[in-house]
Image (cartoon, rainbow, N blue to C red; front, side, top):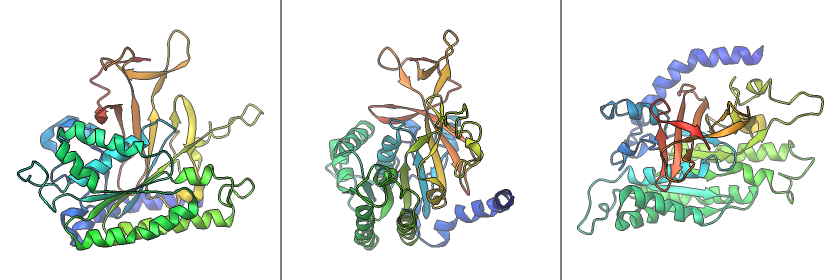
Amino acid sequence: KFLKQLSLLMECLRPLCVGSTENRYQERGCGDAARPLSFGLDPSSWPPEGDDGLIDHSLGKRQAILDVITLRPRHLFELSGEASAGKTQLCLQLVARAVLSGSAGRNEAGCPAPGTLNRAVYLFTEGGTAKMDRLRQIVLSRMGEEAVTDAVMRHVHVEYASSVDDVIAKLVMLEDVFRDGREETSPVTLLVLDSIAHVFRFREDDAYGAAGTRYDASRTHAFFRIASILKRYADEYSVVVLVTNQVVDAVDEGDGNVRGVDCVQDRPGCAGLRLETGGRPVYPALGLAWASCVGTRLFLTKETARCDGTGAQRPVVVQGGPGSGGKQLRGMQVVFSPELKQVKTHFVIDTTGCVGVDVGSVDLGFE
């Protein structure tokens, strides 16, 4: 009953939250650096010069469908999904747009004018430096100039953390980067943590991930410690904060009941939605403690459908792409947010990054 009453209260307050958030970065006098960001799923929105993250209706219905999800400053966003759903791809594309959104004018060498590029901070806990190679590929394919690509890469601050304590230590150290950016003409506009789940779920040699201490006080304290640092940076330095998370399968308990299949939409953090990816029910990892730290939760899916011939779930692809099977169709769903509706947009991944797809105007098939 309490949760239902709280849900009704949040729904009543939602219009007030939207109105206040709409102009919050302008009211505090933060200027262009505090503008919202979009993932840039519509190719016509590149290059993002002067990008304010909002839908430009002059671009027509296409952008309204593809770039309907915007990320605003002073807010903590989470991007959850299974492996290979596209979390890192979207993060890297957002990094490129965050840096380029401040560009205005070029010098004689073809580089963006000095002081016109923003900065972005990318803290990763899994993978390697190949992520930066992919970022370079995205920028080069979108902008088409080595000089611009080199300039963008110089404005991305990269850090690696291998444990929970290391994540906290690196976040504390990053304040110097934010402070320097505010004092200079290239402010930091985006902070990405990719991913928070990795250091909690796959580290059995510390108290945060060891068996038997999964929900202990130290783990919850670490969640709140990380979230408090991220939110302080978001508010004090007017940045967009994006954190990636993993998902948990709904597991059969042995009595024919699959935990979460019938009630996954009632689980904390699912906001009444039945979350599925690859044809199976899942829910974001790290439980209620971390869900309470998140302002907006976005969920990525790998789209599947039942084949008429066999009845089995098969990946849905966009026909006409390179290769015999086309490109895997992926979706991005708003699970909960104080300002965004529970909308869903679709995209595919290619060498240029993440490209939006209007499912109503393309041919779909099975892989």
